[in-house]
Image (tube, rainbow, N blue to C red; front, side, top):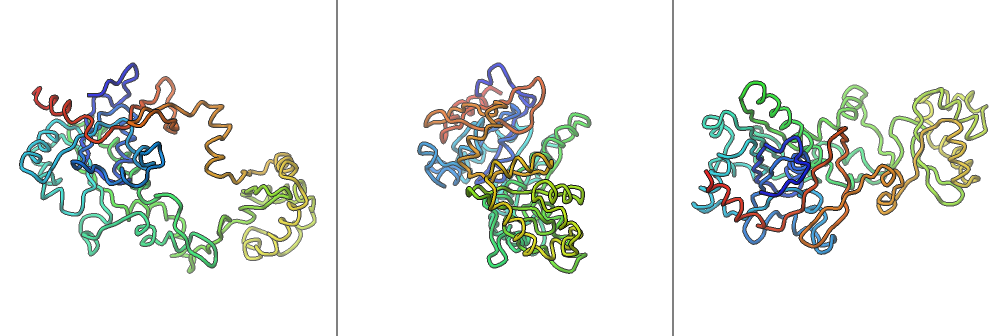
Length: 386
């Protein structure tokens, strides 16, 4: 078992066995590892988690894998062999939590299906992650992040008016992983109270579907979907990017009519346009977005970004610089709040962001990223200690 050091974490006594690939399940279990849980990651011999081969950008390792797998113990196990299945069952017998996002039906074939385990291990928490859930016409269909973005309608409302676009990160996987993580924490609390485990099922379609709540209600009850508006808000105006005269793009976020009046007076220095019927309320401004954006763009083009931001500050209007990813990595707020930590990996130390939930008196557990099979021997020795 890995040396947890001084800060063991609140889940230090919890053992998680995970048969996981790619993003959704690894994202859930990494959150558990960051809280100190012992996460034993079962990987295919010689190949491992397919995310290991996504790219080589982090000193030769894949960025997805480094992001999602710190703090875990990697064991190589051929679960298709009789010996491998026997070892897998021994691992599950020692686990508090079992997580899997295998292909549909694979867990049952390995003898670790939820119904089967619930009868022999009523205290076990089982988390099954899939694309479409159990039952229904799509239950056996393979699912990947982009495909779920398409199936939930997210792509149809993202992008410009001319071009629908996917979200630039694995949002369906991340949503699924976060619901799996919160579901497992809930089940651990319930087990502490009742002594009983739980079977948790999380599907990518339904996880991202929950995040689609606003456009879903807007469409079902309004008759039309929110329009694709690029970086602007589809149903609030002004809310989006405007470029200052020095080329810096500033994103505005106005929320109510009081802010609109202050914006016109102190930022645009055009208080009279609050009386223009085209801009009388938010619905009018959205309907006349082209005229509105043209007016604002003209003012911003005459200002430097510093001048524009001073006016926005004076008017107490929310705004943000449109940063690149590289600029985000150098964000002064992250440095000021000490949000970076060194994390060992098989290819050397990297810097990683501290988990976003800060709990007073607790430090995050940010243990190394494992090499493939690095912990096979110590984990097998641990099993033999019974």
